[in-house]
Image (spheres, protein in one colour):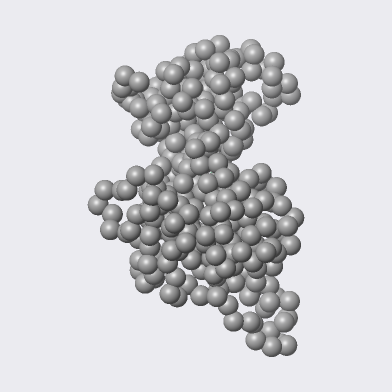
Length: 322
Ligand code: 8YV
């Protein structure tokens, strides 16, 4: 495989690039002084791409790489990759499902509890010496809440399973009901929001879910309502959320993702009662290692002629007639 050329457009963890270096010829695009002319020079020979970060792998880039066979993405979400177009061109796209499910589910439950019980604020309270002046104010609670899962894929399911152990009711919204799932299904998100007092967003990003959580959904969630988003910033209309928080249309929010991250609107930063995380859902050494290994293993498996390990639905393998 030493003659196979792989493009890495943006920096990736060394445990990924070191292993790819051992197996393939690696082109680190971000290290080039003139990346555009470098890409022009190597493009005809590129057969694989390792996609990190959220740099768009769009139709224009795919068209520049005529020999491309596979795009191996770091992350379960791949809304930055035009997978449908890749599929039309016969290019396989892979992601890193399963290996991050438990970590992200742990993070979602942690964020939910931290948001309700205001643990980050309580930590600041201790550090600022305020405890000496009096007790920390009482907080909202997870008790007697109904949790509305927005999406019930692998991660949504893992969160719901954890929440069952917390003794709260779980309901869910998805386009079609899931097989063998006992939680009540709501075809209408607004109706579910009316019956829930927490929404946990776990749907994939992309055009199909753009601003799914809008002012009408937040209005339906109501003044006891809490929004938790560990999916993609694009799923929530951030401006509508800011307005709903400012007007106390909903109670609070815990957000790990943002529409234009790493930029976070000042209006959210200024709100003491919301909890904001820097997209760390899968961000443990253990889980990022497992994700990185799957990025490497997908490329190795493909170029060993054994097929991709985790192809996305838009690029099934073996190919079906599409
Ligand atoms: C990653 C994620 O942090 O898997 C995903 O979809 O959002 C995260 O686990 C991200 O993809 C890394 O850039």
